[in-house]
Length: 84
Image 1 (spheres, rainbow, N blue to C red):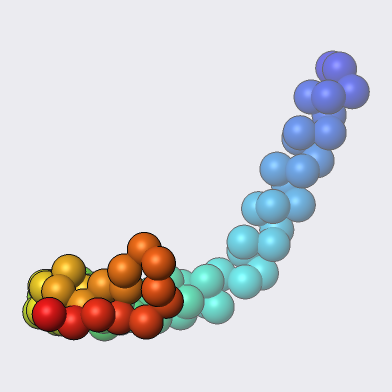
Image 2: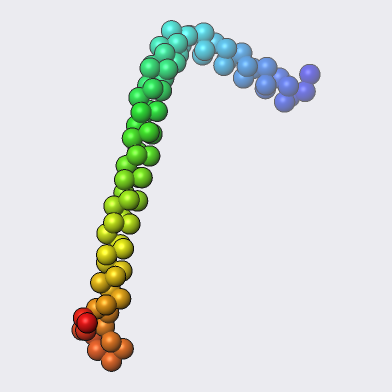
């Protein structure tokens, strides 16, 4: 048997031992992950809704701002706005 194969066999044995020793804790953690998944989906959905709302607010703010900017932009020779 090659040295690499022997190392893999030893590693598999240790991994099996660790999983067996921590079986109950691993099952408990897996159950908690299943419980947390719906909450995470809810948060993801809420974040998507907030991003959509921010996009709409941005449009509501930027359109009037752009209109005012076009009317009141500084002249090329001055740094102060010249609203018409």
